[in-house]
Amino acid sequence: MKALKGRDFISIADFTTEELEYILKTSALMKSRFYSGERVIPVLQGRTLLLIFQKPSTRTRISFEVAMRQLGGEAISLTWKEMQLGRGETIADTARVISRYVDAVAARVFSHEDLVELARHASIPVINALSNKEHPCQAVGDMLTIWEKKGRYSGLTISFVGDGGDNVLHSLLLIAVKLGNNVRVGTAKGYDPDPAIWKIAEEEAEKKNVTVEIVRSPEEAVRGVDVVYTDVWVSMGQESEAEKRIKDLTPFRVTGELMKLAKEDAIFMHCLPAKRGYEVTDEVMDGPHSVVWDQAENRLHTQKAILALLL
Ligand code: CP
Ligand code: NVA
Image (tube, rainbow, N blue to C red; front, side, top):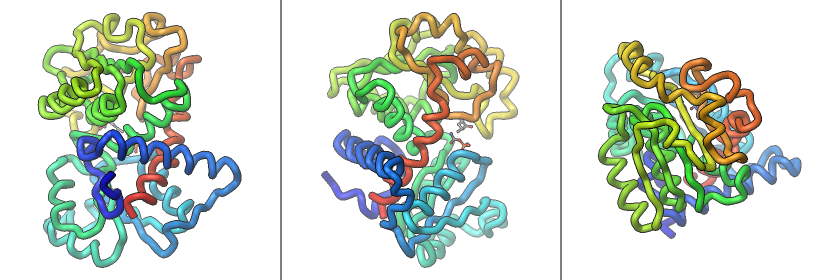
């Protein structure tokens, strides 16, 4: 296995199955040590993480900041606008400067290409804290949750119902397939996953002897599955298309009725924030299948693992 130290964490596609399993196992260890009373595991003493946000965040920002504290290090959070980036300083120049101050940078950006540009010019690890294309930190947390709830992280069928072009789905799709799970996407025409990501998923699926499929019926998407996942229909940056997206995706709402078609012990997942009443009903969010709060918590433990391994 290639060492993880010094690497960027931008796309799940950049990591092998073995590396992803190692990150997951380290995450589980971080969590169990935390619950055994070791609230601080000081492996990053004297180290600083910079967080840059071009869009809002609750979970990502707080869990990264707390993660650094629990590793004995520190975090600085800034918005794009309050940095000189907002006045036109280039990403390349910013990357060169911050590399002299901090030990890693996590950025949430509109354009995935900006992250790639940041990584090209930074000499420190660059972590994707969500882009228009992927949300890899979310995907690792989600696989830890699936492992905890299902007792395994492979051999399952995971269904994503809603916006097939969703950033969270892209990372989930890649990690799920790399770890040997079937993935079924239920979405409307015109909302299919990014073709480049879908191609990687198909190639991986063949290697792992699992399937990836896109279906147009929400019922077909969830029938007999172990996991039902959804995310908002209007992601950050897509507000101008809201009306059309809501209209097109309304048939893909996760309701109590729809959940009945999944396995009896199926879990319901959502990366949050949820738009209750749109992609998911209160009944499902607050119902017995929902694991969304554990899912949110696991961002903390998995990010401690990612930070400790990259740094
Ligand atoms: N799931 C997630 O990334 O949430 P935030 O947008 O609150 O960070
Ligand atoms: N798809 C959502 C995820 C938020 C965590 C968005 O990009 O807004």
